Image (cartoon, rainbow, N blue to C red; front, side, top):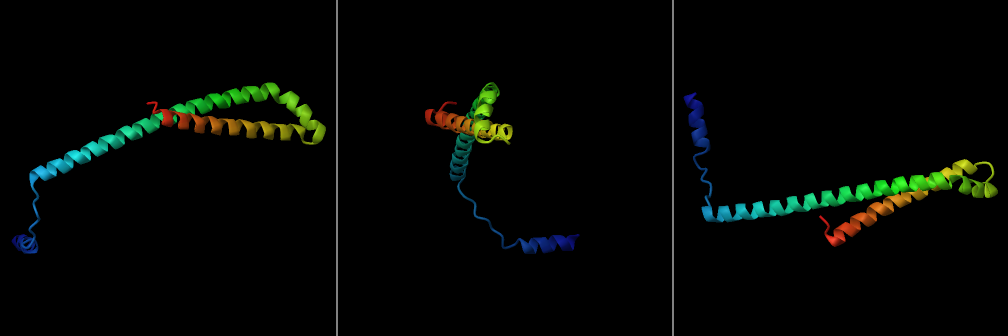
Length: 120
């Protein structure tokens, strides 16, 4: 055990770390804390904006689904004039694409609006 202690003492004999002034350390530490707090606030604001945008997109998707249900028979008749064999499948695909487009547009617009207006 003593032999191992001697080896460790010899190993670290030349190790002399540079000790900086404590005022510099505290200034750097406080600056880093302030930067961490700024980053935390920005992340928190980004999460709030994202949550808001998701809620708006969900509401837009629900509204798009309701409108698709209401307008489905009329569009199916219109599509059946051009494609009589797969009218219901094509109609469903059209409404799905339109609703997805509405959802993504609503999300992007809500996110852009809240970021531009800095709503937090």
